[in-house]
Image 1 (cartoon, rainbow, N blue to C red):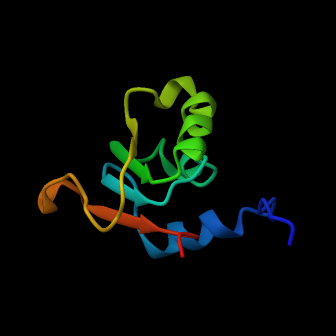
Image 2: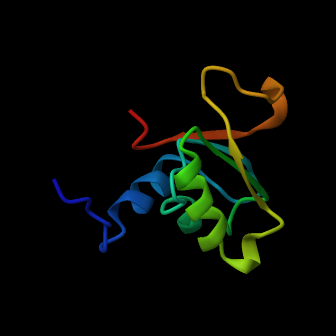
Image 3: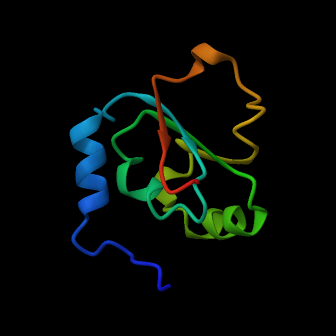
Length: 98
């Protein structure tokens, strides 16, 4: 199966209808290479994007836009054992992670 890249931006449009990202602290579970992260991160005040795929995170770090370097933090972690306090985030994104 070929991975679809969503050239029509339907995925981000659906996310933006479901949640307001402006001035939020976002936890993204399963960020992979950051493909979705870069589409909403500029609106958020802070993003912590986690994944247990270290190769995907390596690519995400390389591809992270310079403008997002201070507000998007990428971490190797599992959703089963989050290393953050519960009240740290306003919104959680869990997309394409199953």
